[in-house]
Amino acid sequence: MTTDGAFVEQLFGTWDYVVLAAMLAVSTGIGVYHAFAGGGQKSADTFLLADRKMHPLPVAVSLVASFISAITVLGTPAENYIHGTMFWIFSFAYILTGVIVSRCFIPIFYEYEITSTNEYLERRFNKFVRYIGTFLFFLQMILYLGIVIYAPALALNAVTGLSLWGSVLAIGIVCTFYTTIGGMKAVLWTDVFQVAVMFAGFFAVIIKGSMEVGGIQKVWQIAEEGGRIEFWDFRVNPTIRHTFWSIVIGGTFTWTSTYGVNQSQVQRYLSVGTQKRANWALGMAIFGMVLVATSACLAGVVMYAYYSTCDPYTAGYVSQTDQLMPYFVLDLFNDYPGLPGLFTSSVFSAALSTVSSGLNALAAITGEDILKSIKPDISEARYALATKCFACFYGAVCILMTVVASQLGGVLQAALSIFGIVGGPLLGLFSLGIFFPCANSKGAAAGTLLALALAFWVGVGAQIYPPDSNPPPLDVSQCVNYTYPTPGPPEEDPPKIAKFYALSYSWYSLYAWLITIVFGLLISFATGHQNPKDADRTVQRSVGEAFCCCLSRETTDACLCGVPTEVEQADKLKVSPDSDDEKEPPTYDEIKSYDDEKKSNGDVAYSNEVVNTADEVTVL
Image (cartoon, rainbow, N blue to C red):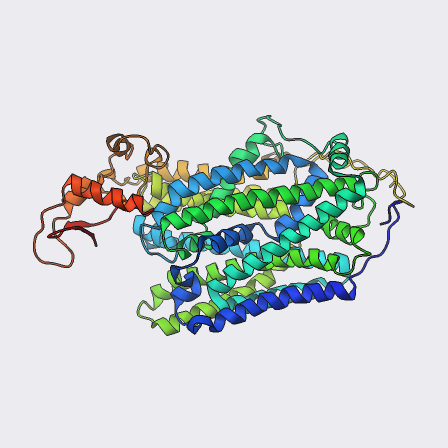
């Protein structure tokens, strides 16, 4: 579209393809390098966890890249263009998520040297509950990765005319290749490169777009006049698509399910080796998430100001809102060879980073939760080979899932809906185990499955009867040759059942979490709840212990609801598992001294079995 509102056909040039091909080549090269560097990916620990020796910085960048991907690059600018800036408030949810995850979940996972998050569920409940966690993770990731692959293919199709499904295959094959041969190290370092490309694309759009409009102040003025600048909607109606409460509270639960208990993210925390380094990585990642969200939202505001008098979507120049951003980029940089290719590379980069993380995590879960339960004595070499085959297999499955993704509408809302529908019950399951010592395995299993069913009912219903989001109007007054459509017959009123599906997608995760907790506890008490005095101290954590570190040890112990303290649990362990000799239990001062030393090193303070040797306290 020219500045006078006329549509102009736009296609990639040679240099755009060169830039895109260079990005794909670099990503593949990083994978090939790590396939052979340092002896290659010969063990599962190397392939899945990078030997637990990664530096926090690349892990932090990877945490950002894993779930803020092509969904953000395409969906968030379009969200701000159509609905306004309320989405920016998710930055507050990211910060709250970081605090909750660092205080409640990372300490639990660092208590044991685990590879699969679901190992915790088996230790806390039983193997059946562990398999439920495995199923939920499979369901969430395969649906989500289908969207992630489809989104950049859609972008490339919009700006180049290249076959949509040909693009899907190109993305899926390149990502599956370097993930399968390079393992976690390849995933982390390609994420660093790809996030840099993603930021370069955003900055180019913001700078050039604001210059075309007349400066960033003019951009903000036009957006404000068009009703796009809105942050402080404090209405409490849960059917309103975005309010301050739905984004901050609902968004916190959505992102806590992602950054707290999702295997893709937990694997990154574990790859740095210590709890202190994991918290550093998470803190830097939260800052990065806020920066990415700010860049994406600002790009959407600039795009609105540029098209304030001729909306390409209403005018029919693009068929979906997710195509607005690539259309805008090619409109801006049509006379700058290579720059449209840079933006499309940023979309591809964001997708590749997310898919590679997901494939690595799916391989880890399959190996640890399924393969090892079938063949517990499998050799290390065979296990490493099997996890690589799993990564390759899931790459093919996710390519097939793009067919489903193509039917889900806007990629941003679809992705966050999946996080809530599936991630909410998963977060509830882990919350039952960690914070409610009275919950038993029957309550945990039944509550989680019930929450999943009810969440899917609401989510699928919202796809069939989508609630009205009431966006501010868009202007087409300056579009050349635009003919206003003739009003058709009035739409029929939706059936009464559609009211049940009007809940904002921002609340899905909290809705599912509450169902899991409430029914999980009710069923636990109805079937004979667990006595907190019989609970394993190392799998429990109280809210007071997590967030009230200034309180005395006696006060935080009182918040455990009857769970044995370290001293009480140690008193039960008078015999070392490695010795037939009876040992005296360690004293309170010995355990306190040991815990203080562990905390000063950034490690988990609470031990599972503590014995007193001749000259030191040893954790067995």
